[in-house]
Amino acid sequence: MKIFAIGMNYIQHNKELDGALYKPEQPVIFTKADSALLKDKKPFFIPDFCEQVDYETELVVRISRLGKSIPERFAHRYYDAVTVGIDFTARDLQNKLREEGKPWEICKGFDGSAAIGEWVEIEKFRDIQRIHFHLDINGKTVQEGCSSDMLFKVNEIIAYISRFFTLKTGDILYTGTPVGVGPVHIDEHLEGYIEDRKVLEFNIK
Image (cartoon, rainbow, N blue to C red; front, side, top):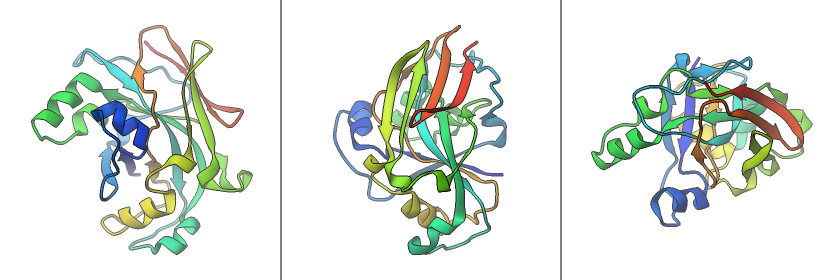
């Protein structure tokens, strides 16, 4: 199983991150190790190698068949479910790596950094690009997004990634975070929703 993730895929988040509204020329792709996956309501433990860990709430797509060099017009055939996930980011470490022009893997792909909720079949939605999702911390909504605001749409991303990687059944795609990221703290309770359905729930330790 491979975990793919997209950076800078919501224009307002790009302003939040870098102070400017912009669209990358191509999707920004990074990967996470399979040990990053956090599921089944297991707690997230804040690591000791950074000073700030931020939540990044995302719509996550499950790949359902083998594919390579997939045309965008056929990409919808290659996923079957979605959920909400958290792309945890060691923010201070990421800032340092970006300044030095180094890869992001250790600030994005560390153990437990890919929290994921329960899957919802794609047939439940009229359009994958019109799905609302949000994150609550201790019962208060802290981040909201809609897939219609993605700079690169799901089918575009799948077509792009499959030029370089063979997609396999069970691979996972984090599609980017909207504006509103922020730090997590010990003893907080996180709940992720697709529309009004809670699909993700766990604690910070």
